[in-house]
Structure formats: C-alpha cells, structure tokens
Length: 268
Image (cartoon, rainbow, N blue to C red; front, side, top):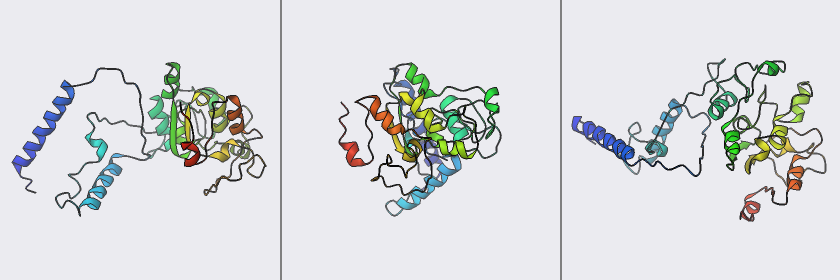
C-alpha cells in the first residue's frame, strides 16, 4: 500500500463526504427502541489494542492491513461519540461508579451505586446525606416503555445493578453480604431491590447469572438441584425465595435456566 500524500488526502476527502451524506440524510423520526451495549473496561487504549489485535489476526487474509489503519465494526457507525464515566474519588474507577454515571448522568464515588457524591462506600450513615439518582431505565418506564437488561455476569453485579439499585457498597448483592458486614436492617440488599421496588420489579426481561442471590441458602430444598453453578459464589437471601415469588405474581412470568427452556417460551 502506497500511503503517500494523495492517499491521505483522498481518505480525508472520503471521510468528509461520508459525514456530509449522513447529515443530509439524517433520520428525524423518533426511535422505536434504544439498546445500550456496554463492553466493560472499553477505554480508548483498550479499543486501540483491540483494533490492532483484530487486524493482526486477520492479516493472513489481507496483507495490507497491519493494525493501526484498521477499524472495529462499530467505529463505522454514522454517529460516534465519547463519554467520560470516571468516579470522583479514584484515579482508576470501577464498574459501579462508571455505570451509575452512564445510566444516570451523575458522577459518584467508587464502589457505590445510584447515589450522588455524598455517598461513601461501606458507610451506612452517609446514605442519610446522599441523594438517590434516577436511572435511564426508570425514566423509560415512566414514559410507558418496556425495559430489560442482559448481562454476562450476575444480574446483581455492579454494571446491571446500576440500572435499578441504590447501595453504599456494590458488594451488598444479597442478604448474606448485608449480614456479614453487620449492616442495619434499614439497608436493603441489591437482590431485594431488584425484585421488590422500581425500576427493578417493573423490568420485563432480565437475563444473566446470579441465581444464588435470589434464593435461600443453596443447601435448602427450595434450591433448584439441576442448576449447575460453576462459579463458587456463596450468597443467599434471608429466607424468601424471590424466584418463586416472581413466578407466583403472574401466570405470564417465566423463569428459564438454559437455552432449551428459553427457546420454548411463547413471547406472543
């Protein structure tokens, strides 16, 4: 590839023309659906490394692609923007604070969910001085939109929990964690918030892991024996079985544990 001056001038001209075409043909209709994809940890350096790695893996098919000049698929979208989702107290943020910023627009403290900057991690007393922030999922529900989330981790983990929970500690996912940290009874675990208050309990679709956060001690008979959990995560509710409660709330409520059960659902 001859990357001389005319090459770069032609490339720049082509990019400008593409941008002009997007602007002139912009769709001004209201979107029917909005889907937010989150790649945890996808900073600009990470994207750069991914872009180069992808190109190097594919270089055997196209010797002209070396890395830096390649592009990830979504970088070709007609509209691309940047968002700073840092925390207010740490140089390197975590998923709880960054997801809270992403879903609410309000920056907060590392390791916390759904509060403003008055919250302090592990500090129950700080909850009294902090203000709960409203997530995009709550606003969507108030606008009579159906909402849901899909995650490759536990449904009570920091990133998905930022959609519906308010917690001074991202690790207070289940009652056992609350108990072990000697947190007073006025604080509700993340799993309880998901199943018992808005916007969590108004969510139409929830897909992910974390069965143990929603049921009593796994050694109890109520725990589904055929559920294979390869991740040693010891968690449970105080006594309630949120999964059974969910199924009993409505005949339309369904719980699936694998792909076969998912494919059997009649979504009509």
